[in-house]
Image (cartoon, rainbow, N blue to C red; front, side, top):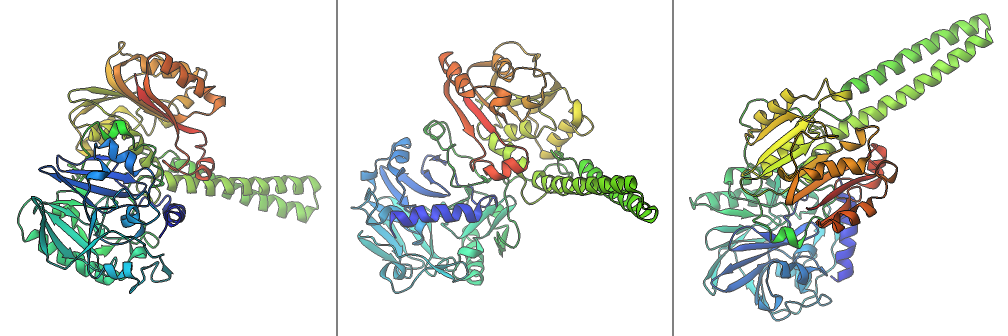
Length: 557
């Protein structure tokens, strides 16, 4: 399997899974003092360090940025002498291929004796329910073949091999130092817990489910804290969460097993930066349940009332048109026929808008399949970082969604949400709604106050971070760049900002020049990210839903 095959998979998998919120890899960084990871598009590779020895778990894609990202972790590729392979899929062995950069050409590779049959050609790897054969992997590394239950040591590091066939025939997971379980493609973490991995990529789904049940029994019998680390969906040390749905398979094309934290296109990785890699530890999957019995209600950017109103209008116009046309035909009245035709045409137009409104309402719904608004909120919150004891501000907080998301990501800080709660959404969004949603989410480090983005009721340099989502384009008659400067006015030196909006030139003017201005004024790491290129949505979807020109302005003051 050559680098071309990795690139081909990137293109095909991006199209296949885009918008399905399936892959949510960790960004490059450290889980704790022993475990680090590198993000390669939708996949993670891991490094385990103990007493001066570092081993690698899986070798990722044939990925041209691997050396660079390892540098963010201060890990020298030449120091890697031992690599554990869970299975031989494209995104787990690519760095060992003959046409790779050969960063690990002198490393010993450890792989299951059954899995090794894929590498020798005795068995061909099949996906999409056996319909497609993956290209063979060509590698020249020295191999050590492993068996189920085998225990061995590399330096002071203890490694136990556990066979979990199903995704591939010889898939192994590795329990390292009786604490860290590297599961490869055995478990898929959804919003509500772990499932058997993606159905379309398995050799035998029934066998995969059986293997996951056996793995759970094996791990729970040890009666100790074990960190479960997946290849594509993060980590957790909550076994109830990790094995919550062990008898159920993630079937992305028959039921949408989406997670709002997953990126729209997992192959878009602009948020994976060296700054973030060095900033702090990578959070586990959110395994906490709502403390209150009621789920939060963040509303919908396309209100149901608009959908119902458009449908009712279409029906009324249609009935009126039919009545007028019928009467005009009986009386042979030309004027009546014209009026009836106009009413009928209006009915068609209103009906089309009703259909569009229904599609948009479903896309934006927090409880629906696409959950676009939730994904945008969670994605924007991912750029908001606060120090312990710090305070952040969310401008135009609406129903409190972004404020609460930022508070959950920064539990040692406080968030303030401000809004005037007026205009088209005043009957849906309010200070009380925000407070109710925070209670439903079990979030206490937030408060909500009245505040106008045109003139914020806060002193200069009051907050350690500022954020906003789709607010300023609604403020008619005000220069948008001046609104941005007003928000940055209340940000402390060294504080971060993440502002997402419809930043078309018609609304905002020359934003490239504005970015240059911020840099001239001393702001650092300033970026203007087009979020319609896979980060939150695709370009066509953005245009369809009226979100064309969506951009995220991030940086540090």
